Length: 481
Image 1: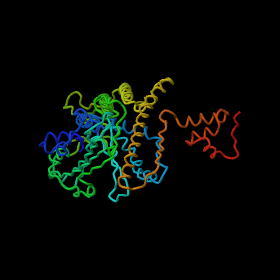
Image 2: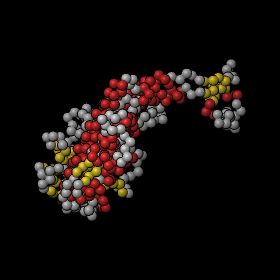
Image 3: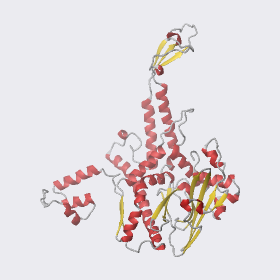
């Protein structure tokens, strides 16, 4: 789907365009615990991420800088720029560490989607051979919470997965419901009506009922090993982890769901695109040209003027119709107003940076940032706080993920119990210039103001005792007084 987010497809199409028995809530006898306001917002954020507020429109001249995807990507980079993660302490820790290799390789992409949509679900599950733990990533537009506890943590949810095979769309609904320490997981699969050829992909999907026919899970190879219903006792955590963005949800303050990192800047992002469109039009409208009478050129068999080869774009020809303007040749070169438009664009970009929690110069002109040292520090500090909170959210989410993976290890007797110690480093490179900080600390060593062991400890992230192993036997460093 290009112009219709999956969440809109499920909530609006299932519940409004088709009979009630086809709705997600009726099929599972549950009630989705999210507001229509949040449903619409998540759909809108997804559209903005994919195409900008609008797609480039050749007819209207609308242009977009596609800031939502750029903002999400930049936050993902800032969150993970110095990220290191490992588990150790026992054979179980080694096993879990190996299972998390897939998460590490996909984390940049998944954190980016998390930023865009305000939340993500990590759902570990045991492979068909019962010897590995895989991790599914469920984006916010395919996640429907059904229950929360008093702390706002999700205790029940419906996760949606789809596969298109030939002329049919297959949909799997997976409902998790944790009541106290009793967990129930229900899996149901459905086959859509036959997909016919439509004018657009959106029409094609709307026109076909995805819940037309309930089918066996074995219909799809990847779902064949799943049980229709599983009951478990002594479970104190849902078998999935929901991670929300840490900033307050100003779209729906009463919702426990997270908001997109660009939610507060939606209207200003539209202003950016409008100003960018003006800039592009200014370049086009003031492009140098030569206005000339058609009679100045030879014509082809169709009577069209033959313009100088390779210079056709330069000439704009007109018919003088024998008037006194016959034979005119005039240069068209108006003064371009790009400076004032660019200044306006830069100011709007700075507003986007402020609303999203980015440092000035991230999107706007980096040569036109805050002038004083205090202003620069304050701008970076704002970005640091936002990113640090994001890192904390993911750090806690990884703790929960490890907890769920350990539950699976116990349930399926995959690997014996053992100590699992998490080593996770996020760094603070967004606030400090690593190279400048290196030079500053090294100069303190050379000035006999810092022990070399302390410098090595900072650089390698170890204790001073461990750092001593890195120091050459023949030290050329000054001795501390």
